[in-house]
Image (cartoon, rainbow, N blue to C red; front, side):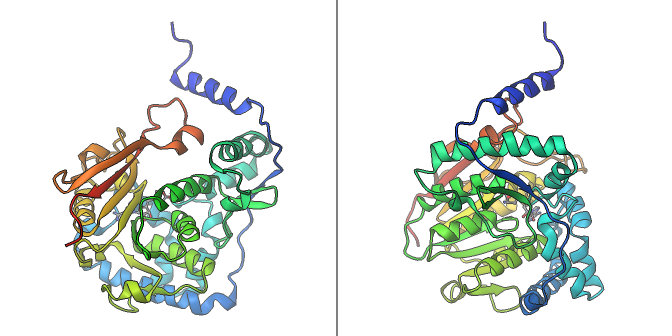
Length: 379
Ligand SMILES: C[S@@+](CC[C@H](N)C(=O)[O-])C[C@H]1O[C@@H](n2cnc3c(N)ncnc32)[C@H](O)[C@@H]1O
């Protein structure tokens, strides 16, 4: 006879797992700051992002509605990113800059980070202690034991632009999710071999994976395609993190083959995907986003990715479907329209983040990654 509901078993398993002794000793402190005032010296960079955002919003309104956010993501955009939306509507760059300076410490869920979780941890001594004594040390110990190969914890650290919350571990600023971005970036580095690889990412959030990829592939060219709001966060985070790299934002020049030799980072609204040339991308990446798109948008983006890329890596839901409000649901991995006559499925594996990080022992831990490679060489 079952005692308690399924959550009782999950919570008991989690509690036991988290309390296994950690062999290494780590000094962990939660970091979550109050909002900061924008730094006036950033203004020229923020003006570029503001101009790109305003133009992207104008042009987004002229696109097929399939390119607009929908379902849960529409709600997230309208609530958490209100400072950007209102900054545009009121021509108020101060409001816009304030959000960019603080998106990593935002109390409302932005969908691209865990700031709202850190805010809750800060509010409760018990939860904060649990994070500092159990959650974060276990995660770091896992990385050190299986993934570090003797490398220092500095490999996991990220700059705090955007007032990022997270943890200070032995003096290194680390986001829990950056542990898995480091692991995935290393995996992806093995999938590209050109001297100056062109990687494209759809829905890259604020650029966490891109940040780690850039550290590992020094001559990387990166094309980031996203909704205008998240693109602002990625532009700000990456431009602040890599001040010497060359960035092309929306409205600053066309998306042409030439731009990829002139610039290191090309950041554009996702509706521009239709403008890419056939088979022009070395590796297209999508993490945790196609699985939340409406079905018609997911099909369109996957078809465009298959048209434009030589290889495709994605990490999305295997069985979980989210309702979209109009009676439809999101798609699961096996329903993505990937033409098996054109692409070989080289590898497929369960997402280690969901097994190691949290949510163990739940069928909802259903993220799998897939790696597809085009059969024919470039035309
Ligand atoms: C949950 S976040 C994932 C961010 C990042 N890939 C990660 O794993 O942390 C979802 C991403 O998909 C993007 N997105 C959501 N709906 C979209 C749509 N309809 N078209 C294009 N991008 C969309 C969001 O802007 C965001 O960057």
